[in-house]
Amino acid sequence: MGSNGCSHTSASAAGITGNRSHPRGQVTPHLVPQGPSMDASKKVDLKIIIIGALGVGKTSLLHQYVHKRFYEDYRTTLGASILTKVLAVDNTPLKLQIWDTGGQERFRSMVSTFYKGSDGCMLAFDVTDRESFEALDNWRDDFLEKVIPREQDFPMVVLGNKIDLCDRQVPKETASAWCKEKDIPYFEVSAKNNINVAEAFETLAKQALSTYKGIFESYLTDSIKLTPNDKPKKSCC
Ligand SMILES: Nc1nc2c(ncn2[C@@H]2O[C@H](COP(=O)(O)OP(=O)(O)OP(=O)(O)O)[C@@H](O)[C@H]2O)c(=O)[nH]1
Ligand SMILES: [Mg+2]
Image 1 (tube, rainbow, N blue to C red):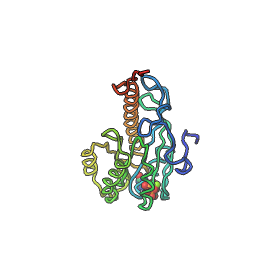
Image 2 (tube, helix red, strand yellow):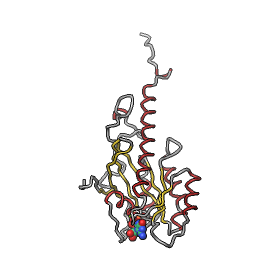
Image 3 (cartoon, rainbow, N blue to C red):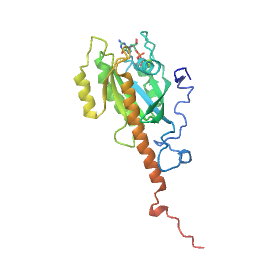
Image 4 (cartoon, rainbow, N blue to C red):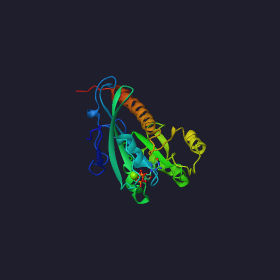
């Protein structure tokens, strides 16, 4: 853990999908805390993943958000790595486990194995690279297909990065229209100049927390509901 409350771990060191108890997907019932509602003082662990084409600035956005640093040099992400960030949203302490993924085509199938168990997804593109925007449909479809969300609106935000550069190829209106059609919040950001970065992460954290709470509550409700089939049968002898 670093001095600013964050740490950096490689995906393999972190055990990839981990074995967290979680209301989405593979719930381990005996690990779910008991009680009528979530304890607001308990820290909630959320897994957030950032995906998008090669070189759009995924790692830079994460480093800006977590470490408040920006590096001009480009080192492609090999597979995935994880950063953590502790924050509070609506008085609930959160620990975000943020998965950074490499955009290289050769990592595509490996990266998609990290989608499982995600509570929120950031789709990133570079406003100076039209192809990276056009690839968003693909990234989104692939993600939704793999996570099979239980609820209709999976927590997601789109980031149009590098707005500090002048050679824009994707107008703001075009990106906004794409996001509006899919009902996904859109943020124009710059990892370099730290524009809108925290806002984007916090919006996604908020959405993810609210979905998490919804699933948690419905899980508890379902688990105490007695349907006719669940009623104990009278034994005959
Ligand atoms: N001008 C400018 N350059 C940026 C910005 N964000 C990232 N870059 C640069 O773009 C290059 C790629 O950034 P990365 O963060 O490594 O991109 P990535 O999406 O993680 O790349 P992969 O891991 O290969 O998929 C680096 O040289 C960064 O310095 C930005 O907001 N503005
Ligand atoms: Mg990277």
